[in-house]
Length: 409
Image 1 (tube, rainbow, N blue to C red):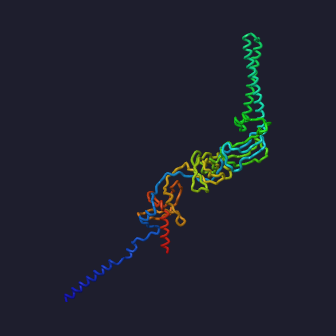
Image 2: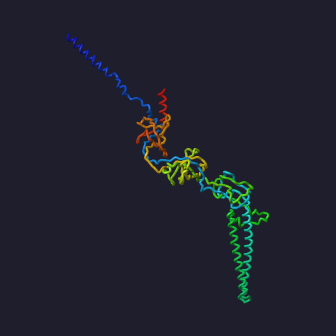
Image 3: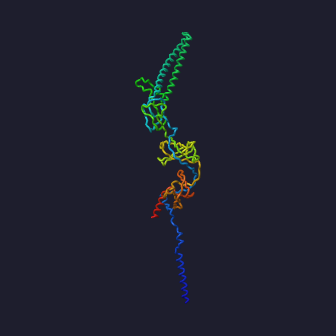
């Protein structure tokens, strides 16, 4: 009887222990919820895949940024490089050597005129030159006569009075030569204003000669390199010094004229840099200098005119192009920035991928601000010191979107 009781007790102990073991091995509901779940905004990329895809990370960091004022404007000619070409005297147009839009160099012939005043001056030059030649001949005769009189006076062959008379004649001849030289110089200076060079003046001939070129022909030439932007002349037309016949613009430097609102005037000033961009060259930034801000506002728009001078030696900025002008503000601030390549467009929102460990990247929606060079301001979504995918961020985005599509399926 005792043996049965002992065996029963042993069996009860064994059954109890087995039950406890089964209870310990059975997973509880608490253990299930503690298992890590897959995060919907996290993508895993192995280190090897990161190397093959050239993924590089960069830290979000703080930089001192200057606020910027964004304006719209129009490309205009630099008024200091605009030439309003007018003839120096009245004349009739004989030949035109350029067309509207032609690019010309300094000294290039623009138009040939039958210049009445120049013809008169050329004739006057010939007349005075002939008179000067006669005066020089008379001076030579007077000089030789005076030399003979001096010799005769020594041998008492003439009187002192006769010698003095010959001296007076020599002085008169000298004065006449000086007068004719002065008049010829005055005429030649007027001819030079019409563009004639010294050698051309010296080679002037009387138009009575069969081979002579008409003395009234005058060629108007370009005063500097530029482009013919306006054209107001036709063959046979009578032009005067009061009428502009061409407008010549040097486009190597241009103005960009913009409107600045009253609230922004205090944030900018003259003498500072600016950046200009146009839709024709979206990847190019043209640098310039703010040179003028108007002292009065337009009463309708409440804006002031602002002018930037921009170098344009390659001629890509065309007159009347619309342009965007970015001007650094006088005010500066500290902002958190990331490389601009880190910011991606994901499902209609701006996002970056923050590296949480060696192989995981977390997508975060961000609010961006100003863009400065290769950096962009991030106002929310990332903290200083966190590492974000910069170079290769597009690959991270592609893997993320692919996994999202796989998960939906």
